[in-house]
Length: 238
Image (cartoon, rainbow, N blue to C red; front, top):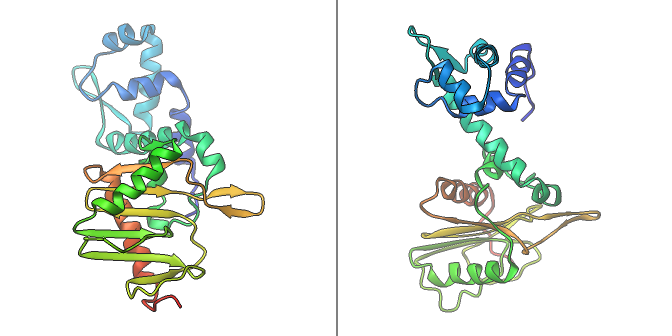
C-alpha cells in the first residue's frame, strides 16, 4: 500500500521528530500542567510550551480551560501506530535479514505487532514447533512445515504445503511463492519469516515469533492462515 504523502502528513511527522515531544506525548494520558512537564523532563517553561504547541498544532494534544494539557482522542489512536513503528525499529536487525513481503495487504501491520514475541534460540523454537503439533486438541493449522499426522488428536487439521511436498492427506492445499512457516493451535502460534538471501528466499528457523492465544497478535496469525487457506485449491498434492 503506497504512502499517501501530503503537507499535513509532513507536518505531523516533523512534530514527532523530537525526543522531548515524544516523551511528553507518552506522558499525557491524564491532564498535566506545564509546570509538571517542566519538572518531569527538566525543561524550561518556554521549551515545554513550545513543544506542547507543536503537538497541539497537529491535533495530538488539547489544552484545557485551566491551562493543563491532555492527549487528544486522535493522539491516542496515533500513539498505537507510533508504538508499532518503535517495535519494528527495535527489531531492525531482524527485518534487515528477513522478509514479510508475502503477507497480504490487510495484514501488513503484523510485523509491528510481533515486537515482543521474538525468540532467538533454534532449539527452543524447534521444541515449540513440536509441542504445538503435539498439544493441539481442537485444531492444528500448518503452513509450510512438515507434519507427521500419525497420532494427531486434533479434530481439525489443515495443512498448506508447497507443491514440492508430498502427502496423501485430503486436508492439504497447495501454496505457491510463500516461504513463511506458520503453526497454530488453540493455545498459541509460531511463525518464521523467510531469510532474504542473495539468490532468493531461504527458510530460516533460527529465530521466530511465539505468540500465546491470549495475545491480540494471535488473531492475526489465525487470519493469515485462514486467508491463504481460502485462496488455495483443495486438491491434494500428488
